[in-house]
Image 1 (cartoon, rainbow, N blue to C red):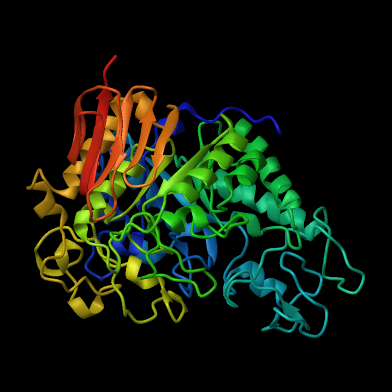
Image 2: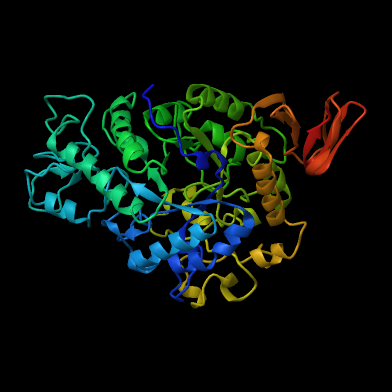
Length: 528
């Protein structure tokens, strides 16, 4: 394993909070969230207790893929404000002890990027992957004077930056080696982009499609070398900053140079089974290639935490103390927790699990109040990926209060980036702040408990006692966690004495038996 500088000490205790900037808070009344709006709402994040915010892409873009089609890496998109607005956000967040991470789209640009426009008219430019003639499968016809076609990385409007091919083929001369001029220029460009933003006070990047750089790279070894090179540079130039991978295979990405990787709904040999086996209830965002399964956090009780625990054990064993694994509640590409048949009363148990497992928790904006995945929305900036896969349902405006537009924006409702949840009982921050029994207060208490109790954090040990219902495990040898995600009462024999509950509802431990009512959850301190 390549030797890297140890991760910054702050990362081990981080609680991530993901903000989809166009949907969080609109400060200027145009219906689209912006950076000034985020700055205005920092007190909510500070009160909640999160300390690291990841922003989805906020760079100049034509927004054919909601900003993941970058047209200028060095400037903020006007709809979000300006570079000065981002600097003000970073400064205001820093005063509250909150770090800001940007989303780095490393593997492709927009077709509107000046690099691509130049490349489409210059046969000697190798910043992208071009055929000299013809249009092989998967390639898109040239839009410029250059003959041939280019390789996209996701949508056709997102041409793949050329980081080379791991394997050559004389019949395919576009397969340049990783040390060719174009790939070397792109590696240097990544350093320039990262250096620009880190120099302004940002604390790192979440890297989009991090495994996609080098093509025909079956074991990702060449892609790993790209990130290893960048990590060594980062360790020297910006040692207190971090790289988070959208890779979904921590045992590969972290040895490659990332400080942390997420369990995702894709990635690795099981195509994201670890995360899907927890949350995916076959509603919301569903890929046609996924095998049906009963997820663990389902009222019917047909699922098991086993697939997740097995994947976590394998990844954590491979990673050791060289990096971290992050567990998200949801994200902009995957269903919210409150989705389909899952009801608000099921969410507390899910958060007790997420915030007491030895991973870095990542809370998707609005999940802390139980915002609902909204089905049936029209395609918005490339949100629809299939008949049952519409990402817009997880991207609706943050629900702040009971004023018009739920306090998100003063714009007319028909000008909002996406429609609000129309339900009359939609949750809001204001209502839940006023109710100490709410999900919001529970999440806040759990974050605070995690912070003051190192054994419940990312570094504490975990001993799994029971992988059925209830799910039972011990953290740091001192704290018993009980989670029952099903609607029916569940019991399990347990003979160790406990001092009392630190947090919980519907769990009793008497006469050597744990009894967890439907959706019950509890955190107990063990007796000596």
